[in-house]
Amino acid sequence: MRYALGVDGGATKTLAVVGDESGRVLGVGLGGPTNYQMTGLEVAMQNLSVAVGAALSMAGLGIESISHAVFGMAGADFPIDFENFNKGISSLYPGLTFQVTNDTWVGFRAGTEASYGGVVIAGTGANYAAAAPDGRKITGRGMGYEWGSAGGAGLLIRDAVHHAFRSHDGTGPKTGLEEAVLSLLGFPSYDDLSLYMYEHQGRFGQIFTKAAQIVPALFQLALQGDAVSQDILVRTGTAMGEIIGGLMNNLGMGLIPADVVLVGSMFTKGVCPLMISAMKTACQRSVPLAEFRVVEMEPAGGAFLMALENMGIRGDTVGQISGMQSGEPGVKTVGQTVGEPGGKTVRRTVIESLGEKMKAL
Image 1 (cartoon, rainbow, N blue to C red):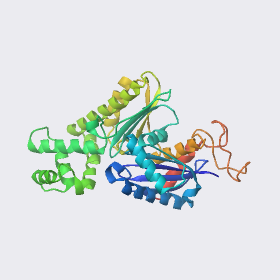
Image 2 (cartoon, rainbow, N blue to C red):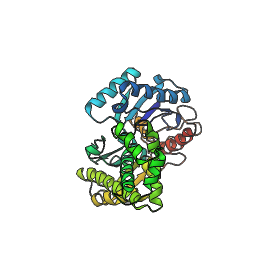
Image 3 (cartoon, rainbow, N blue to C red):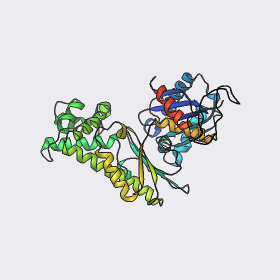
Image 4 (cartoon, helix red, strand yellow):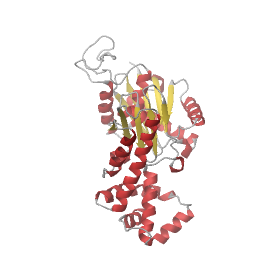
């Protein structure tokens, strides 16, 4: 039996998944952020080691048992980033066969088996990527608003605080964000909040965790009819749809049916559908036949599936544990075509077994 490792390394946390070639997830592990642009490479590798070590421990395996690994890393944007990640991981796990890719692509594989389409990541930050049927790929810059990006918790917080100040100062429409922002951040007045932000150069610093609570409050206010909150979500969703639609259109996919995979807490936890609706409308102006899929599993599961692909095992093949078969006892041979009776696809096995393992975290 061969084993694979998949990792989704993000700006707030890292999830590692270890499993076998049938798609059974045997272990999962959490670590801190591994976007080295934010943490530095040394801290990123320490956090990666924690996540991978925990997954291997749960699986009862050592790193030497891993046939292939895929690391989907936030911060893998420029050639120098890939060079740094490759050096860091090679030093951490000498002899390991692995691939480093941008985290958008493991998110894409978590949502679809297609070889082409688009993906939108919207969690702490945001990024976009698209792949054409002929193999051409585009990955968004992923560096923030100034680089032409949109979406993610950071920008929603920025917009919410902006309009909360304007509501308080009488320079914009009244909004429930005025009360929510001040309460969630724990300041007695907007003058006190203003001074804090001045002293921290506009950054939330020590109150970042509190600031993150603004996002669900924004969605809830929008659901309750707060016009300013609704406008923020619609405006953000429209920009996101324009970006992913533009990338796909640039690859000549304007009239091609294609999956657009939606990854991240903005899609899975946002209680108001306005942002997603606006994003779909804007995207379909460029790619009318786009079909949208919210991921059914953690993106680390997509990294695990990519590792299996690199071992010659597709997610749409059957790899079910069943009765005695030829080969290893109790393991059905991997590689049958989809549709044969008596087995789940590798992808379905990953979705179900990963979901069970995640309950332990």
